[in-house]
Each structure stands twice: as C-alpha cells, then as structure tokens.
Image (cartoon, rainbow, N blue to C red; front, side, top):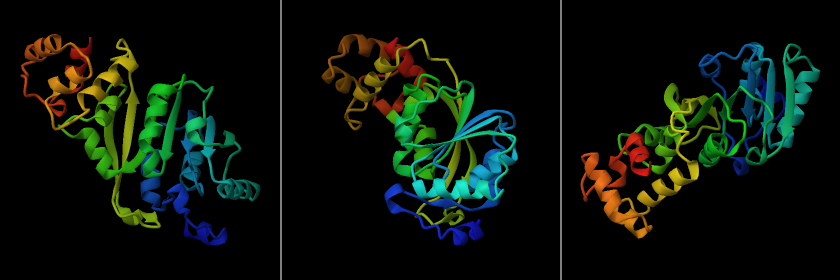
Length: 263
C-alpha cells in the first residue's frame, strides 16, 4: 500500500475527510464479512483503491465505484492500464459523482463504504430510506463512537432509524493506527442486514414521531409529543400499556416500543 502512495504521491485531502485504510489484515477482514464472489457490489469513495483491490480478488460479477476525487480516478485508470488491478472477470464501472446524488439501477446488490465520518449518517439515510433499489447488505466503516450510539441500551434518533430497516452488528475493530493519516479515534466496521420487518409502518410517519420524541431529550417524552401536537392522552395510555409512565424519556424505549406507539 505504501508503495502505491509513494508512486502516485498521494496526499490525503482534508476537504474530503480522507483517511486511508492501509492494514491488509483489516482490508481482507472487511471482504470476508459477506460473500462477494459473483455478487453485485457498490463501493463508495474507494480513494486509492486499496479495498477495491481486495474486492476484485474475490471476483464480483459487477463492481460499481462511486468516487468524487478526480485524482483518485486517474490513479485507478492508470493501475488498470498497467495490469495492477485484475478487472477482467468483473464488470467494472467508475462513476465520478457525489454519492448523495447517485441512484443505482442495480438490484440485489451489496454496498461497501470506507467513508468520511462527517457523511456517515447522510449515506446511511440515503441507502436505507431514499433510494428506490435498496441494498441487501451494507458494510460501513465508521467511528467507534457512532457505532456505540447505535448499539447503546439508550435509544436515539440514529439508532432507531437504523433499527427500523436492518439488523446491525459489529464485525471488525479498526485501531486508528491502521489509517494514514492517523485519525484521533478508533473505528469499527458495521454490518447491516436489510429486512422488511417494519415496512408496514410508513417511514415518514416513523421518522417524524421519533424526532418529536427526542426534540428535547432531557424532558419527558410525553411532553415532547404533546408539544408536537400528538394526542397526549392517547400516548399516555399507550405508554402505560408498555409499562412506562409519565416520567419516561425517549431514550428508554426500544424500537418495538416505538412501533407500538405509532401503530
């Protein structure tokens, strides 16, 4: 990996939040989370193609690369030209576009993303809620702190909007020294398996409700909902049915509790 960085004089761009994952053991571990061989794969922001190389070794049927950095696209085209990457058994497409403006026609695909931390939540929202063709699975490298919020016993808007759409599990711990340049905090690789368990409940209705519930996290949930014009008596009755009371805060309820309150 270091030879590639030196050959192309690659420097991380702070404006794009670039931190390059170099550890080959971690890169291989990411590719072993799910089957890649003869699958449809979308990789977001591959940068200098370290993870792409490992994906190509496993010979997916289709690999779509979404990259915003023109210089990184020049690098991969040069590496393909020099037979540095084996693309001959894969239908490869490189798209120079902002991922938040990207829409795929692929179905039954898996998404892999080593992305800047500042755009993690928008990307999760896009592929879980906005795109017409949603992935079957997602493998996302993210800040350890963000992952801990997702799995915390205390609910949050972030954890709930993920749990409505998929089963989330931690697969690979990634120490900060595995990156160049080295970030300030450790990371983890999150595996999201998409399901339709709660699809009967309208997404907009769900998101509006949880945002209202957390509008002031330190206040009682019933007051937050009342301020958002939800029927206080009805909500209070449902809370009692779930063995909660008027002092309950939004963070105390899990995803199934919220589904019951809204339904």
